[in-house]
Length: 545
Image (cartoon, rainbow, N blue to C red; front, top):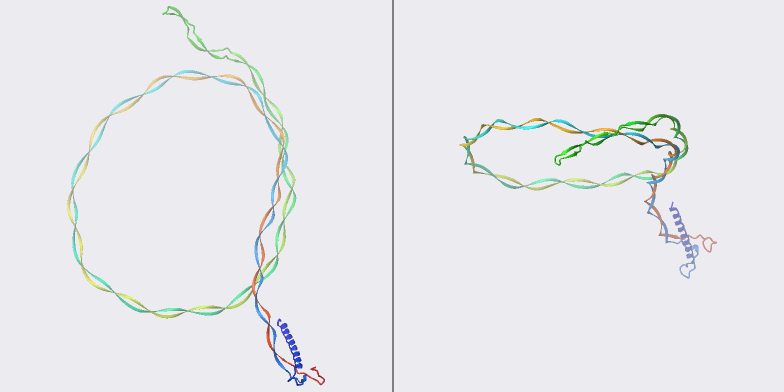
C-alpha cells in the first residue's frame, strides 16, 4: 500500500519532464536554420521526426530494514507489609463508691474497787536432833600361799650325716663332615616382540533438528470483589441487678445475772502474838574464898517464848448477792438488697463489606520452533602396534662342597657326697614354786551419829487489801463507710495491625523489533525523447494544430 503514492509521484514527474522537453524541441526546430544561412527556412510540416536520449533524475523508494528497541509493560505482584491503626474494645472493671452506715460497737473498760482479805503465811524455823546408825566398812588385808608349777624349755643340739648324689656334667667335642651344594645364579638377557592395539579417537560432527516450544506470556487484567468483615461496636444500656448487703438493727432484751453484795462487820478473836523473851534466873550469894566476902552471883540467862493476851478485832466481810437485770441489746443482721444499676454494654455487629481489586492473569501462548544443533560423535579406531621388550632369564649353576662341623656332647657323671645337718631337740623341765597372794576382807562396823534437822512451822497472818477489778461496757456508734462496687465498661484500645497487601508493579521490559523504513533515492535513468510528427492542413501556416 505504501508503494502506490510513490509510483504515482514518479509518473507525474516523468510526464512533466516530457512535456517540457517537447516544447523545447519545438522551439528549437522553429528557430534553427537549415544547411547554412543562405538557404530558405524549411516548413514545419517538412521537418523529420527527431529522437534523442536524455539522462533524467528519477526518485525511487527503497525499503530498508531497521531494528529499534521497544518497551512493553510487565506487571509483577509485590507483597508489602502494611500497618494500620485499629481499635479493639477491652472490658475494663471500674469501681464506684457507695456509702453505707455501720453500727460499730465501742467497748469501754471501767474499774471498781473490791476489798479482799489475804492470808500471808509466816514461816518459823526450828531445829531438832535425830540420832542414826551408820555402817562403816573396815577393810583388812590377808595373805594365802598358792603353789604352782613352771615348765622351762631346754634345747639340745644334735648332728646327723645325710648322703646325696650329684650329677656333674662332662662336655666332649666331636667333628662330622657335612656335604652341601652351592647354587650360583647366571643371568641371560633375551628380547621379544609384543603386539598391542591402540584405539585412536576420531571425532565426527553431525547435525540434528531439535524442536522446542517457546512460551510467550500474555497478561490479562481482571477485577474481583473481595469480601471482608468489619465489627462495628453497638453500645446498649442494660439494667443490671446489683446485690448489696445492708446491716439492719434488731432490738431485743436479755436478762443477765449481776453479781453484787454488801459489806458486813464481824468481830473476831485473834490470839496474841508470840515473841521470844530473855529471862534471867534469880542469883545466889556465894562466899569468895579469896577475899572471904559474900559475892552475889547472877543466875543463868535463857530465852523463852511468851504469848500476848488475845485481842478482839473488827473486819468487814463481803457478802455476795446475785440480782437479775434486764438489758436492751441491738443486733445487726445482714439483709440483701437488690438494686437496678444501668450498665453500658458494648456488643459487636458483624458487617460484610466488599472491595474491588484488580489482578493480572498471565496466560502463556506457546509457539513451536525448530533449530539444528551440532553434536560431535567420537569413534574409536583400532591401530595395531608392536614393541620390543628385553627380559632376563636366571639360570642356576650348582657346585658340590664339604666342610667339618664341630658339635659338643654333654654327658652327666654321678658323684656321691655327704653333708652334716645340725638340728635342735626341745626338752621340758618342770619346777615347783609357791607365792603369797594378798586378798582383802571387808567387814561392816556400826557407828552412832547425830544430825540436826531444821524444819519450818507456818502460821497465817491476815491482811486487808483493795484491788480494782476491770469490767467492760459496750456502746454502739454509727459510722459511715464507703465501699467500692465494681462495674464493667468497654474501653476502646488503639493498636496497630499488620497485614500483607498484594500490589501490582509495572515494569518496562525492552525488546527488539525489526521494521521496513522507506527511503527515497535519486538515480539517473536514460529517457528517449521523440518529437511527434506534425499534422498539417492546407490552412495551417504557422505550425501544427
